[in-house]
Image: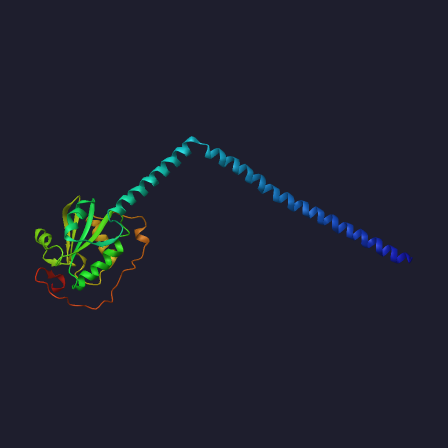
Length: 233
């Protein structure tokens, strides 16, 4: 065998052994680094277990669960009472509806009055946002002539606000909303807050008003012999 060839072969084997050793060392370093976070994570798990066994933390957790359960039960009761949606009621249902909840917004409307339709749109948007307040509407011309007379309602739309069954305030036409058809849902929302019929909600300042409809044309409504349309003002 050629001596040069033998030397070349031995040199190649030596280089291969060096490369293999280097690879093994590198692999050991990687494995060592991977084991370090695992040990840290194990320590964190031990600490978390200790926290979970803390009586004070368990007490806070139990109180939070109880509060959430109570809130869910309350919402179920309110839902059965008609909260969370904007509904139409009849004259026969009127007294039960306005006395059956602490806070009630009742819209007396006329089906032919355009401004009543505008109010409908805004109240429908607010009803699911303010679960503690009931939102209803009733046909002032057909379904509740008796209560229209007793409440001295002469202009529509008329929003009567009830607290514990007692009418304590009202919105007549759009007088408190700039007397214009293009008021926003936020404007009505803020007005109802000021009157105390709906509560403040978290994050109100960050929400956009999706019901800001300013492009509706003016549409004169048909006059009713029983009440006056606010659009005639």
